[in-house]
Image (tube, rainbow, N blue to C red; front, side, top):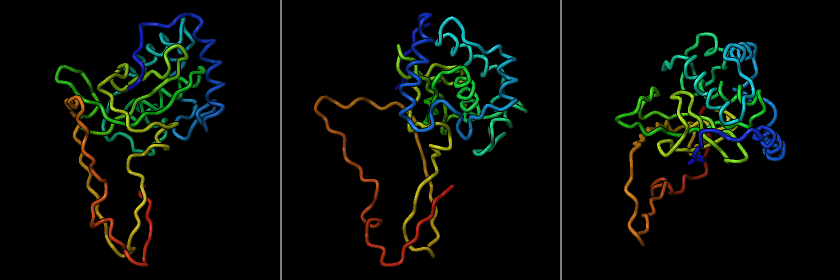
Length: 238
């Protein structure tokens, strides 16, 4: 779970953020300083930055809180308005998109002002009293930014939230291209037609009792683990 965020950080936060960014992301492939495949600095992105008056404010945390509010207010959440491979310009032009678009736009804008940012794929537990506009039960996307005084802090611009215990992180990367939930490898007989169905239930789980060990559940059944013979093939799903 991301680090809880206070209301603001101190004024020296920008200097520490810039220094930490260079030290940290020089060792992490692609996350700093340049763009990534789905978080490109396009002209429409620059137009949005000018429209919302994006600039380094008094402190990095306050700037990011305002950026989350601006992205939330500037775009309509509209399921199926974009595709998984849509560039950010589609959402920027129509001002409609899904959580993936909100996250990519936030990442590109945060990197534009020198804040290290990464994409998070996971789930959001919807509460009865919440005003979440993202789809319940579907995969969700948000952003984590590196602030030296706070470590990684999560921002959910789709719902204008600071990521907390309702955000269930599954994978992180530069953007969606690094962590698509449907990518995998199948090994088996090439002539076999395979169908895959996945069901996810997101909900609270009671904590285990003291001394209680969680049961081991194998991901592969005994039948699936049986030898497949000489003929085999692999298929990568999009």
